[in-house]
Length: 127
Image (tube, rainbow, N blue to C red; front, side, top):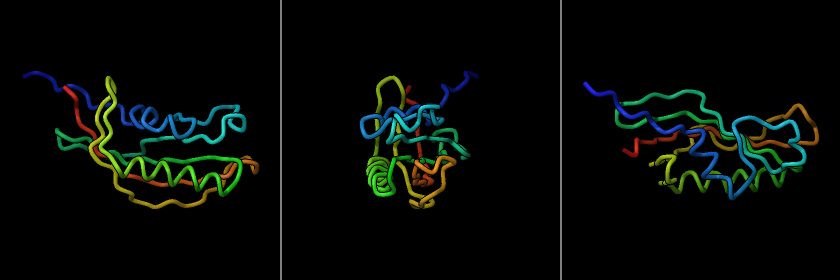
């Protein structure tokens, strides 16, 4: 039996797919205030059926104001749910569905405002 090719790294795929909208990463950088707006992507669970990896992903957007955080978070949401997304050398996201909608969350730095959403993201192998 031959091992299957790994699924794409969904965090990396989304970080790259959103990079033209906002600064992106999987963790907030130490100089976050200088890199706003910034969107953090974190896989927090999910499963697969051997063909499709269905990841539960939290996408949190930070900005200097509430209005800006919501504006960018809405753009991110529309990018994700408008899929599919194909990134050469990274993978294919077939579909994203909002599981828990946009909501304001607190950040430890009161100068940073955040909006969080949780998505179910389906991705597949490209080979």
